Image 1 (tube, rainbow, N blue to C red):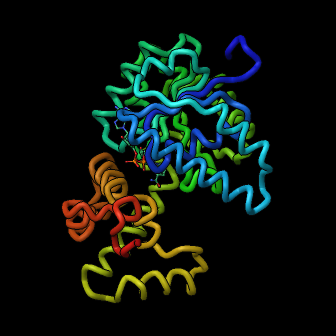
Image 2: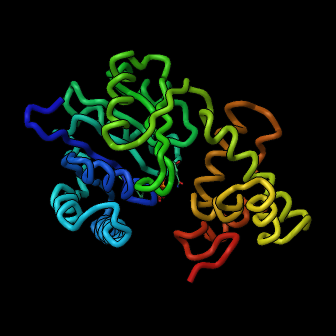
Length: 286
Ligand code: NAD
């Protein structure tokens, strides 16, 4: 790891997940570099992190000096080369295998030889992403949950070539971030989305077939199954494009019809109704 006392992290992609991941690294003492394609997106991400830190101060879970120090440890860049000094890089670009493969190829060139390259992918094979690098033993899945500052789980995904040393380091790292790591093997959707996405897809089918309204479907699952949030509201929180990408990976890689994305989900994505981040999904957001 780095020669300075402070560990360095780089996060690639400053969207829904990337800003939360950078937030958690910076809050836990890492120098965090958040990288995206435009300064506008990075400014928006920094504003989101500031807002979320403000909420934590209000709730009393952190104090103002932690808020200030967290922001001081966070830098942003539009250049992938800014990941050069990082001990750990977490990739959080959209769930598109071509884009992720290209990102891993480039990261392998810019990152230090000892750096661990992690992906926050929800479903894409870690083994395949690792094959685009010359360090497959130091490539791993580090699957944070949304919203990252609040959610406890990190699903740590071992690719076929991931070394024991890398898996151990990432399990320790997740604990250092105040999270609970759960180690799983590489398989489409891992455990989390292999189980979650068919439920969300089935809820969309219920809406599509007129079985009930969106509100009624979510209410049944909240009150009847004790879920804190209904599946359609959760899909809006995740992003409907991300849900569609994940279901396509499950459908293609596992080859079973039960994972076929509901046509209504596809229509929403075609319309740009991507959920909370777009202001409209299965629900409207002001
Ligand atoms: P998002 O669309 O909100 O954000 C992706 C960001 O990546 C955007 O800001 C985009 O500008 C940026 N980006 C695109 N190409 C880039 C490049 N070449 N270099 C740098 N940045 C680039 O997506 P998200 O919801 O944050 O998802 C990111 C990853 O996390 C996906 O793999 C997704 O499956 C996974 N994930 C998402 C959730 C969720 O609830 N949304 C939960 C767990 C995991």
